[in-house]
Image (cartoon, rainbow, N blue to C red; front, side):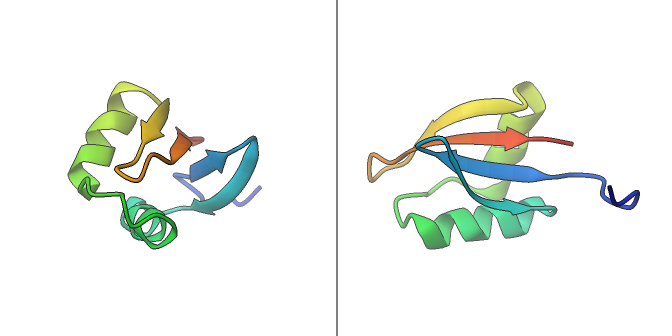
Length: 71
């Protein structure tokens, strides 16, 4: 594993990994590209990941995702 890797965020839908990013800003941007119903800011996601490393996210367009901070 890459020793320089400090954080890894993963989006899961229907038991499949949709994408992973090492940067929260890129992760949120990518989530917004996949689902236009994603309206929360990067700060909101940061707070959620600090509370729970894995949580269920329901977007405005009724898409369900499991979002996980792996590292």
